[in-house]
Amino acid sequence: MKTLFTALFLGLCTLLATNTAALARSDNYVQGDVLVQIAANADIATLVRDLQTIGTQRTGLVAKRCISPPFHIYLLQFNPLSIRQASMLYALRQHPAVTVAQNNHIIELRETTPDDAQFDQQWQYINTGAGGGLANADLDAELAWDITWAALRRGR
Image 1 (tube, rainbow, N blue to C red):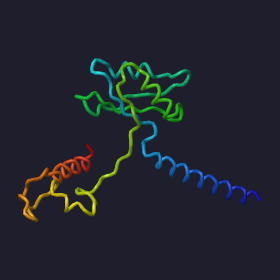
Image 2 (cartoon, helix red, strand yellow):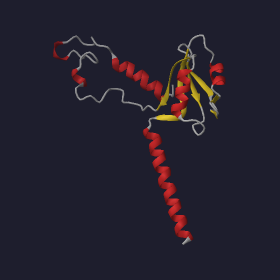
Image 3 (tube, rainbow, N blue to C red):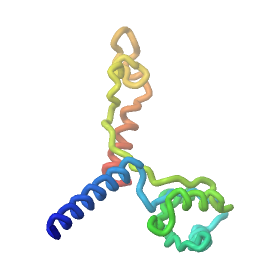
Image 4 (cartoon, rainbow, N blue to C red):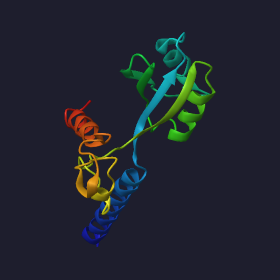
């Protein structure tokens, strides 16, 4: 009986862990991560210090790295077991130094050209001169996609 109970308990734990992991992925953001843009005259260290505690909860908030110095955008991390993601975002958005705060959304690499079935008919993107058009009179958007794709592959 004890073995059966243990087996059922382990099975239930596995099921819950699998469902929890699936739910975390379906949120499409990294738990405990937020991206913030602060005002040009603001200091990230002051923001982090101000939000070490929200109410009675310790947040464990740290500035992990600066994502974009010219735009004052930072990746912040906190302990999601101490404070809910939504509560942390709310507190950040209320802080006078913060211009924008959002979850650190999970992105996926895309192909260098869209999967649009009619892409080859959109001359403004890649103009080969077919159909009487002027070859290369286009936006060269695929070159920008290639640059962005390469940068994402390098982790930037």
